[in-house]
Image 1 (cartoon, rainbow, N blue to C red):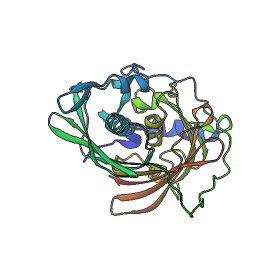
Image 2 (tube, rainbow, N blue to C red):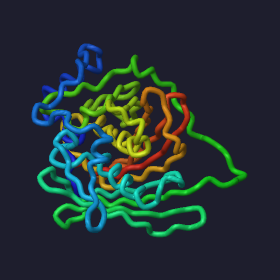
Image 3 (tube, helix red, strand yellow):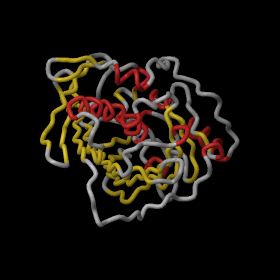
Length: 306
């Protein structure tokens, strides 16, 4: 089981919780991003993808400290890297329709990792592919992708209209706290429209948040969307009244609009806890572009150790 500290490694002190409370009331204004001194902004997202090099059974790479969450690689980046390598085999003609990710073991910055993509089957309409990210011989992330072309259908409906959020500039930015926020968070803007900030003891885990990459990701929209979709902490963290470790076990995402087009890179995320018992949480997430078009819907299984 991969360990993900609170908010992927963030908010480990009561001082931070108090700062978050102030931010929720509007008393704390987030300053321009202040990076963790031990994890400077070293690699833009697109550069991480392009830094992969061919290896014996796939591709090899290393991670820089700015993409860590706690002691391991940010899970969204791991999923994006797996997708990027799978695309090397499948090409880009068939849109991504769904993916399933299992987080199995941590990925350290102290050693190279290898990703082995495979095409499992290529049919008339659908291509199934997988990718395994390994480090030191151990599988750390296992991914399965479904790519499929459009075809005529008598069915058409959309029962997932976008809620009415505040605009990104009117929403509350989640501050980046030096030494306490997860390093990878410096690459994202996260603006809370509705719901509780982390560790607020909320009755429900139900958050509406605008998220975007700080980097220009216009040339790698598909992989960038996958990383963005995992940037927020699990909504269960809002229900906690004191810090506790959380760990995402599995993540499934259905892509409903594979164009990945939005204005100014903003995506609206609605993440809510559907069930919590015996240390495990089931979370549903939905994503809309800036024009209100549904882009994706997903589910996560999360372990909460506290």
